[in-house]
Image 1: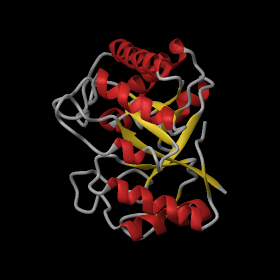
Image 2: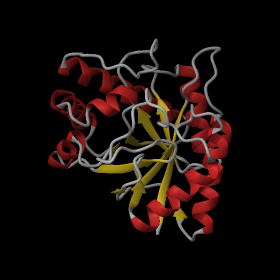
Image 3: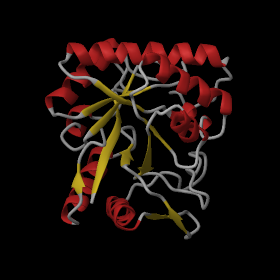
Length: 251
């Protein structure tokens, strides 16, 4: 058994700090690095990418709507062709940073509102897929199962990589509980760790109503902005290793 452990990274901006990327790079196997549209700036991107390279962590582009004010967590009804342009722009920026730091861009993960929107929004899912095709077509994309983006990626011969969220609650239909609802974000390290071991071993996760949801994930995400994110990631990795599960990058 094996699983990837990823974290949203590089989400500081100027003098505003978010998360502990240096500590997280010692725990994760893939880093979703913000590309400046929802968080991050050139210096943060370069510093975070260099840390990933130093710890042999796979570098992924954490692309988003252009929305620094709301941390990329608000839907923006941007025309599809403009969204494609935005995604290519962000991919190019992080690709350049990766090359300069002696590593490569290896995958893509949409952020926040964009991630959730392309679960069901056909036009924006197509816009993201088109960006990946025009950029090169060989970058896998992290996404939710049974989603519009996963179907369109497969149709375009782009690898969809299903992920699970260690620190988020699930609905009975396998989607994430809205952050506006109580209990949406999980904080207990023991509970989170046990859920992730169960997920890898059984392919199921317990929804917020107690039902069991099938989830065949290749990667587990710990949000870098979750309080005590480093402690959660450490607990999850230790629990996976103790259960005999190999933690390694999916790329």
